[in-house]
Length: 200
Image (cartoon, rainbow, N blue to C red; front, top):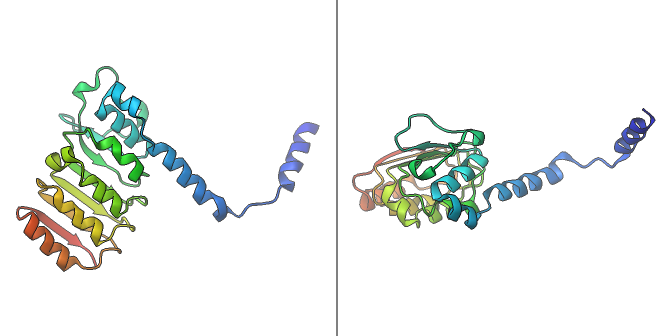
């Protein structure tokens, strides 16, 4: 009992650190760890399994080809051969995915839909990086970008490289300023695209 009192007194005497001071940096560091690419892991288990692990670690959800249910729990990742589990859709709502983790997506060949909603680490360079992934350029059909405050016109314009994109929904993006110019860019580059804008 005496030991507990002594420890308690020592803890109480420690200088209090303002909660806003270091917590932001801690979470950014932790999220960077979650996004770190392990090339050995990708080689060992394949791109879809490695990307699934990364996405679920970061708080996103995945849906596999031929499955209706979304997988959100890392502990429920299917065992056995991952060859039959190909990522078809990604819902990154409220996730901590960031630029350094996007390399996980290089080998994905079946992703048809991506939702980026309230993704605080998604910036223009992330969208530009995604639009450079050749396999994703071929497979992606639908994309939604909602309430990602660090995205501007430059990031959105990069999406024109998704040559098979059929549906693009943009909403609550304060960094996007010229929606008329964006609409014109997509009309020229992707005439078959259904573009929905909910921007101020």
